[in-house]
Length: 350
Image (cartoon, rainbow, N blue to C red; front, side):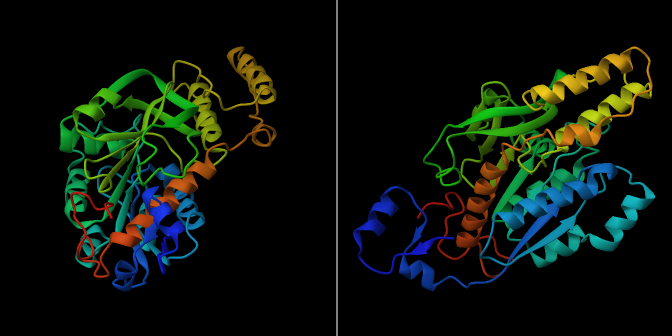
């Protein structure tokens, strides 16, 4: 959260010139200190539904130590759910129509399983997602779209449909901050890791054509973060900063299981830059034995001990900054998008 400029101490002016979060006293006096209400639209399949909840809830909670945050989980009727997942949703999730009536300060929309669900360009199937994104643009202070949801936004708003890769882009990749003066990334490490896991992709050229600003990019994995022209109302993430240390490993184990069950014709490639040399020795041996027709018990516990998380700090830094900016510009009335005096076309401009 920002500090208040309570005197003419020159340090305050220096920080303001650097673009640091310093709030003028007149602006601070108009702010009502209150809780934030963040919508969480979970589009992940049944098997990952609760794990995705935990990942994002954990990241949000660890990124904030000041504001009281109410997270409102909900989903959309874009594919059928099993009985267990449906019972979980019925018991614990909010209804989107109710949330629309109450209002939200911010919104996070997760990705979905590209390999088992229709492509986002099939508007008829994904009409509820299109409706959500259209509503959020005019009613929510800022919306984060993760992975497939970001591809939906680019398709529906900008006519930029994602391309489909022959192989999955997955692993842990080094990224750089391109626009270091943008408020959402100012203060972050200028180089850090982000996990990716996707077949579809929006290129840098497509983000540029849409008039969006790319903030974070990888030479190997492409664009991770891009924002709308106003700099804040729409945020696209192609990577998965919310992933746990073991998330890619569990996905790898799932894919290998599909091969063993005859549901896939090819043995899963290893996620890039993720497994240590020691873990690779173990997993290469498992692969050889499985390809030789052996019945192999997957060495889950042994490999998990060898995994590292190299992206959590940068993820928390971004979420903390995002939450702070939402808090500064959102209206105390949840039915209104911004506090009085904030320009929707440039909400982060002081």
